[in-house]
Image (cartoon, rainbow, N blue to C red; front, side):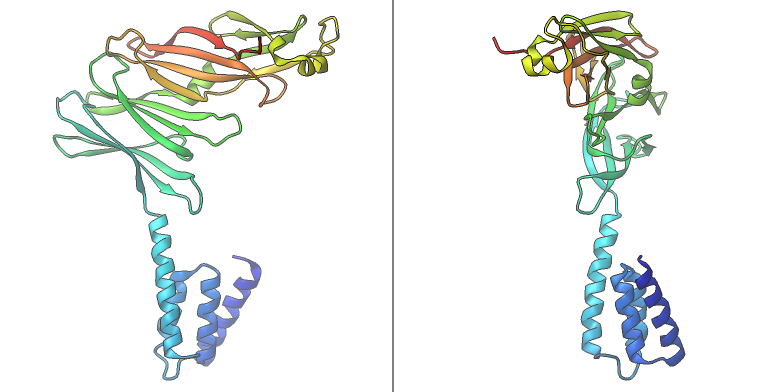
Length: 309
């Protein structure tokens, strides 16, 4: 609320209570409505309509009251959680179908969702487990049910777009353990565990080192074109100055059953950035497989863009 409206509300509130004049009650309700205090404005109108000669008229106050009630109803609906995704599957292994939902609160005039929560309703007992997510705000929340751990029971994958410039995501996997859902994967832990070094080299190349897997990838940059290369290399292919890039956090996480055995692996995508974020050199692809305790890397490779022939 801005200072002017705050002062106006204080002034008209004091004047209305001292004089009980219909004009001041009307002005107080109007100031409260402009400040977005629909509920307070409705209470003020109720007091104003008890007067013998309401200002400007009883009919005008009734019309104002209907408008405020509609505004209050919209505000209440905006703050009410909605179901943004829903799936059905056997989550706890009891051979009954359970309902899995993501609920969230919609931000007014925006595709942003807030207070995103995971809910699982047991198909046999109707008992609901509610799990708040560590990062519970973002865009396009989605659900996927599938067996990631090899026990022939559905696990839950939640993916949310962060809306950041790098296209990063929040991702979580939950698995039932003795009737309680436990988180077995989260994107923050993955991003912290997988570190990389990206350096430009002479001869129009860049090197990416995966520190966790102790692997090195050499990228041919000639597909970037003469204009790009001439900015950073001499005509003989030597770097004009040292340049380092980086690997962004997860921007995609996809369930893929590579072995066709009914158990899903995970394929994570991370963009490899050069001089700036939009200067993408390729994508680091990491295939993760459950080893009965955690997701471990099965392999990594880099996908690069093709150039003109």
